Image (cartoon, rainbow, N blue to C red; front, side, top):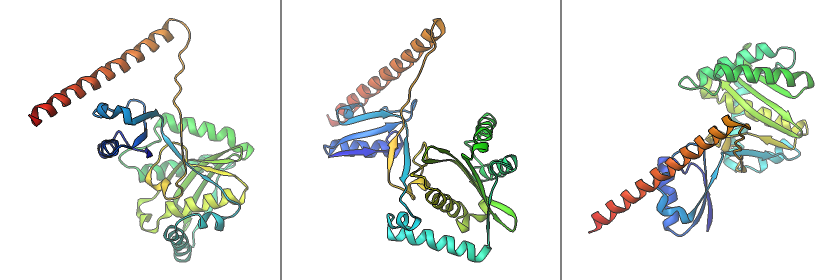
Length: 270
């Protein structure tokens, strides 16, 4: 059987890949450039490694009800129940900031994103500046969605994405941990998916990364590809040779570790 595996470079992923390979399956596994794939050299004939990350997406139907019908009964009921309860108990408002209030909405997004991810963030200072400039260029033509879910006038969740043709791309979000019990991030995500359907978009793209919360909305995946371009001239050639050397050293290291593991295995069996 051919099986696609995500997370194969992690501790549990290594174990799963090995067990499946030993069972005779042919595997396709994705890895991030620079991640450690050592320890599986003896299974190399059974594993096809693909550089890049998985990208979840939704092929949007014509209605919200049709989308919900594509989910499991339990998941469908959970989405409906949480949204109904939140609106009934807290009377929230949905506020859009693009294009006229982009800076205000952006400050809410950054604040909530950092509150949500206190021990790490996808929005460093340079990333945030780049994305704000990008959003500022797209907002005047109506291609940016920057939205908060407010309770009592205070944002408790924020969502940022942009349109590319008939695709709505989700880029980043944030939420107040104090409202985690109300699943405010999930409620706002559902609102934005439903809006994309109602606006006639054909695809809702979660972009890079198969984080568990994304996979609660879809089971459809594709992978991105990594393309490295080098400038012409001496510097480009030097960079290319340096990258080749790093890859060669990593391959040699993996081979040495595999031989050492094989010797240890033979020694213990004898």
